Length: 506
Image (cartoon, rainbow, N blue to C red; front, side, top):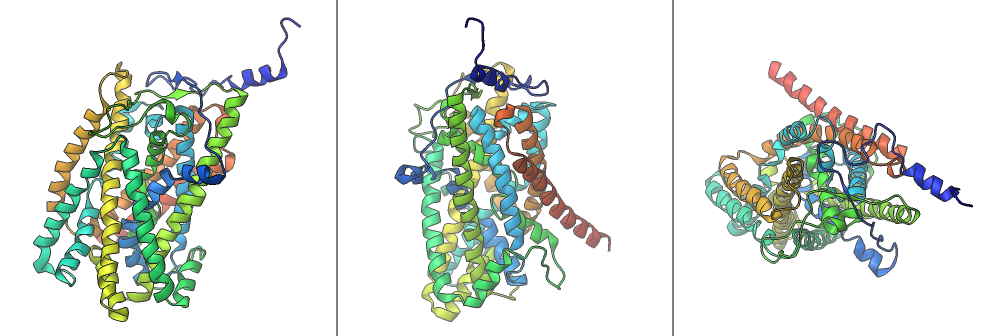
């Protein structure tokens, strides 16, 4: 009958009828989104499905096996044993809530979550300043200093002492500068980082698993793995909450590093990411363009079916790849520190070397060299991802913010990316010369990063509710999880800051 509306048409019209508090075009602060078709999600099963899970979760697992596990992990577990591993469980779980919500925005728009932040009131200028402040703790290249210690130990045949400071510092410069090389070549920077992190995960976790299986006692395995579930357990000794806050921060990604899941999902081409492009490398990336503004899709039945497939895909990425990888990444080094250096006063700057010496003293000098090499592989590739993460985060933000000034897709994003990289390279060399004990900087940066992550969790919730149609908004449990993320990370940093202020006033 002419003039009638089918039930399906009425339902789709209702789905596309946004409530008044939402901003269906992306809000007034940046240009409106374009339109494109949502790509098909990867298959759930088979070889293609497994290969599709080589994505942001894997990259971030490789990046996360670094400062936390080999810097704070030995400090905490050597001092308190395995009973505080439950902090890592909570941290990883809450970060997974954040990551899922951030990537949902990217699936919908093709934009990183930071661009979504800029689209919310009071606008880009305010949020640029706020998050730049929250990111200050992570701009110190302390992982390069940490990578230099096992390298120096391999060269010297012993733990470096004060007389070897010049050697350690110079090796830190070499590691730092070498980390820029792989980011210059290749068609797409994400692909380069993914390959590096895959190799790191296989080599590092493979070596640690073999050593743990054959050299760590069953009682230590029980202590560490039961510690992941001992929620609320605390040692009788005085607790250094600053170290625990840093430990919780880096059990997983930590701070604003979690926002990179959405950047990498975009560059991987997940959801609408395939419609907006990626950041190309300086050499070999001339054919890749990056749009300044995202694209969304019409809420049709076919697109909603594809959307559900993509949501399932990022859930598998988080649960089976990232969460599982992070638990392993925390547990395997913890087994070594509990077994071989328990009770030692660990200098985070030399944690890898102390672990290597503990294993070598018991099982032979060959493990001095192999464990130091493993420690170097933990830190050095993480420097590559850290550089890319910081530069990428602010490249995406500035690139999209310029669209708010009327610039559309003119220009080459590589100029911005490598311009920021050059400035960061110069800063890093200065910082490595000024850097005191990297553990001190890492603790301070992680406490500040916790505050940034807590605030960002609330902001992600606002973005999901304000900029996404109701049909695509996260389940109430995920929204509650974002509130829990806010409470957890602000609470643990608040306790640490209160403790430190109390010590200053005593």
